[in-house]
Image (cartoon, rainbow, N blue to C red; front, side, top):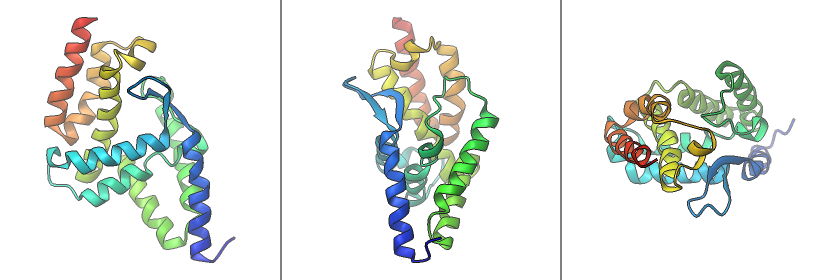
Length: 193
């Protein structure tokens, strides 16, 4: 086990480089290819930076951005599980928890504990920061689907009712204003199809 903190950090950074190879179901807006999980995390951090004034309550933007940068690191080990996949939430949560422990465990102990606690906070989505971060994690793919003429919704036979159920509560909990906008966009999209 490595005991030099800087070497542990560099090893962790090398390990999470693999996130660039985890391909998500969502396409880029130009539809030239599918996005990877590292791009998704970076894009969500930008969403937080620009949209934090629309959170349901005051949030600590630094904590929200940190959550969004680390929330999918577990995909290095378990891959991406799309929202419409029908996968067992319990099995997925268990696999992701093991991955989080392994990956964050590569870091120096105090840093590992801090990031693991932040990852668990995001997963539980009980704090205001986590509610907003989770909302943004649903907003981004919804906007991509609308902008790409249905994108993964078309591929997975997703209906308006499914969108309202799978995206709505999470987005509205973190940002009623964003949900109002997203709901209108989804209804307009499905009204055209």
